Every structure is written in structure tokens, then in C-alpha cells.
Length: 240
Image (cartoon, rainbow, N blue to C red; front, side, top):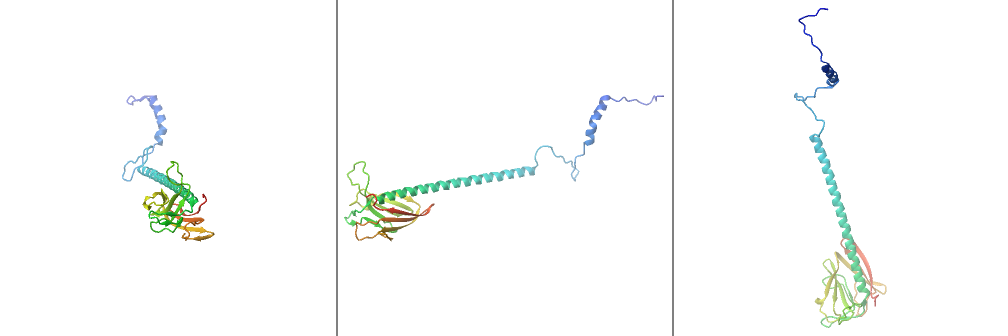
């Protein structure tokens, strides 16, 4: 076979042939990148979020945070209400114990005021004005310091604003009203109604001609903030 002297002979490089064989399938799988209507090349990275995805994620986290704050606030409020109810119940128990102890030690002993006027052993009226709703003389007043006084004590209860106050005097007779020691027995009382029982009969006021007669029991119905209406029965003179 005759060779053309003007035809150039190109020897194929084996390395180039191997590279073409490896890149062949990859070149065939490549597709042109999509283009938007204006002809710009639109390419999306393999990693990262779009702005819409970030906004949605932030919105979800914000909703979760708000829900957590609402639940925490609700739990705190519920705990505060429970503690407040416990405090009110404890205060009611202390007041009940105080009034029970006083009335159980009530004794039929008339007293005298600072002008020498005689006072009945037991006075009980409905709330109204600044005067006491209960006034009596009780026994059993402890005298740990051996002070020169009796174990009898004049005691009274009155309603002042929303408080049930206890008044006590150092002496049974001849002591001015303004020398009373005042302590708060209960707060948050909006209304009080009393009834007095004697020989099976109830009355709204205690006004006996005999100054030494006392009722057998006192019923107190009180409306207390945070608790509601409370009805209590106190027996009189059990400690005599």
C-alpha cells in the first residue's frame, strides 16, 4: 500500500484515550442548567436554606417560645393562687383557734368601765359602727411573770374595715377603752353575721336583763376573701 507523502500521521496518545473513556459517561449525563425567562442561569446550591425556609423556621421557633412562656406564666399563676389559698386557710384556722379559746374560757363575771358603770358579762351585737360585736370576760389568762394581776381578762372583738380585730385590757375593771391592746385576728372579711343560742332558741342579738347570763353558743357566718362564706359554731364557757 502506497503512503501519501503529504498526509500527516497522528499517533493517538494512550493516556488521552483512557481519559476519554472515563469522562465519556459523565459528559453524557451532564444537563444544561435551567435558565429563567430572562436568560439568566439559575443554579441552586446543594447546601443551605432559602429565605422563605429561614422565615418559616423562625416563625415556628417564635410560636414554640410564646407557648413555653404562656405555659410557664400559667404554672406560676396557678402556684401563686394555691399558695394564697393555703395562706388564707391557715389564717382562718388561727382565727378559729383564737376565738374558740376565748369563748371557751368565758366566765359570767360583769365588769366596770373607767367611769364605774356596770357592764354585762356578755355583750353580742351585729356589726355596725366602731363598737365591738362581742365583749366578755374570760378566765385562764396565763401569768408566767407573776405580775400583780388576776387571771381574768376582758376581751372584745370588732370589725374594722376588712379586719376582725381582738381587743384585750390589762384589767377587768376601771380601764379606759383606749388602753386596749389591739391585734388582727383575720383579714379579708367582707361581712359578718352573728346568732346567739340559749336553751335551744336562736337570736340575732344578745341583750339579757340579767347581767350575768351568757349564751350557750355563738354562730358566726363570715364572708372571707379567697375562701367564701364560712359558718362556724363556738361553744361558750366550756373551760369554766
